[in-house]
Amino acid sequence: MEIRKATAADLDGVEAIYNAVLDHQAATVNYTNWEKGSYPTRATAEKALAEGTLYVQSDGDALVGCAVFNHEQLPEYANIDWLYPAEGDQVMVIHTLCIHPAASGRGLAKALVAYAEQLGRAQGCTVMRFDTYEGNLPARALYTGLGYRLAGGTEFFFQGFIHEILVLFEKEL
Image 1 (spheres, one colour):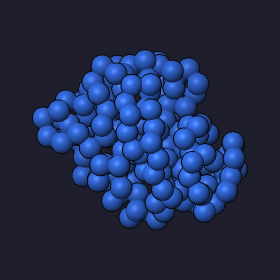
Image 2 (image 1 turned 45 degrees about the horizontal axis):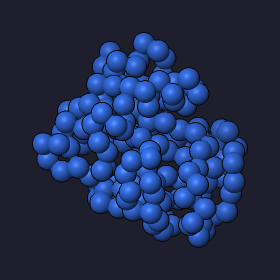
Image 3 (image 1 turned 45 degrees about the vertical axis):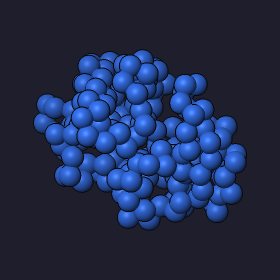
Image 4 (image 1 turned 60 degrees about the vertical axis):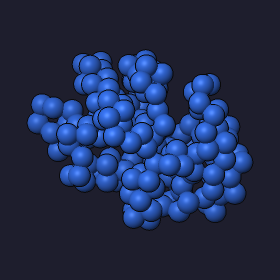
């Protein structure tokens, strides 16, 4: 298992992971509240790749996971009463963490989170943060089990088209 910064050659694989997750949710339960064709899309991955914040997880030649790790806290993060105050580059934020449904249940999401924490420490961050849809029970359980604290929830106008309540988590590094 390898986690690394994505390259342009990974974009097809990342898009395939996004589509597999969205198709799986359409057939079962949409825990993320994401919408196919709106978010996440290839353009989501291309933007993160251009910013140098897209990471991929591979198992041999196959991509099985991806995520964006950066310091971007959406404006709504200011509505939260954080236990661990930090700003800007002191905060590592996890965005759009996806595991291909065919590879789920193997600890891949935990490995991506551990990688993000290591990356954050290496960049001098003091805290990890992220948001997720309030109904994303698997993500909430995962992060709570990894020592993340539920900091609160607030309304977001996500990507300019979804009004929803997102819950925010944090962990001191």
